Image (tube, rainbow, N blue to C red; front, side):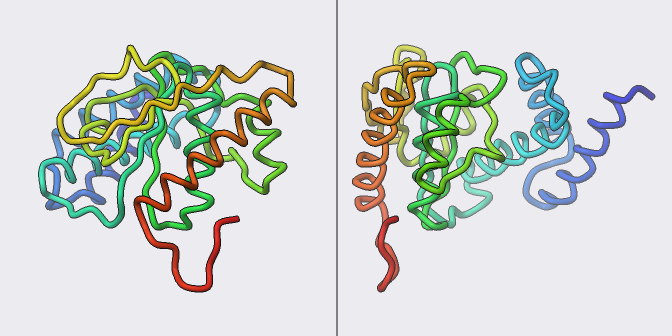
Length: 212
């Protein structure tokens, strides 16, 4: 047995148990393998690849189960999309998760994902007390898209299918200007304002709490 076989076997075993009674074992195995291959294309050098593949497959299986009515949604689902899933969409997802405090479920994806999130985006988010430590670029998949309540297109909108069901918002954000941190901060601040406005539409923050 190869290392890959062992890794996929472990991922499949874990997810089969997690989705027992919700999604059949064959579908779980297919999603595990497909998610691993999809991430391997860009993140093959990332030592977290098996962990990330399991997370990606779990998110996709949850989305599949929600879309087909086998799992109820616990919160509104928001998907942020840009071309590389490295800057704009990662900032949007991180800020939404930060301000939402569990009141929304957040995803991000890209039409042509990079190997890793933008270091500049991580730097300017850290200034607000938000981190990208667990973030990873991932491809846009139909399952995640179909389960979304809101799809925010932060860039590369031509590559995002318009499916019935989700509400689409096109924010038309400029591409973060590389190592120009002042320029990246401007994009971050625009994203932050729009995220908080969207969050106010989707949910009510508990009494006594405020956006940070």
